[in-house]
Length: 121
Image (cartoon, rainbow, N blue to C red; front, side, top):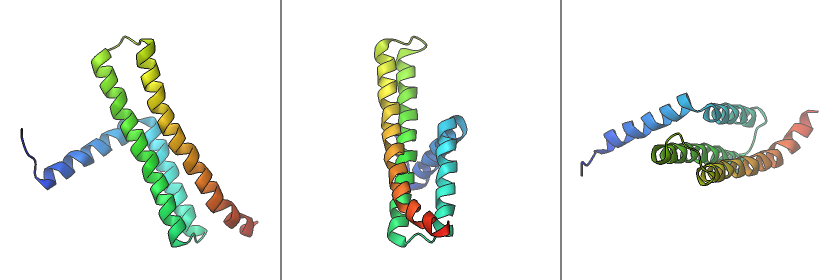
């Protein structure tokens, strides 16, 4: 087996991230929302601990979307164009995992941001 050095591994990982961002609409949406949330965190003076929680949530959602994308490509590779009930179920479950990460991240965001937004209105 070919062993890559650390730089090559990093380059491959960055290529994977770039591909996911360019090819997946939902990834672009998650990144855009993540950037908006980071900007809001600075504007609303979120404290350091809460900001770390927000960053973990953003990373969790992006990681879940990347894993879902890789999983869907793998399923498509083995099953091709034919969509059976099992293939559909597998893809739906993987998409559901992303949805769970999004829902809980949104709840955490609401719990962090709503009290601060009340101060501005």
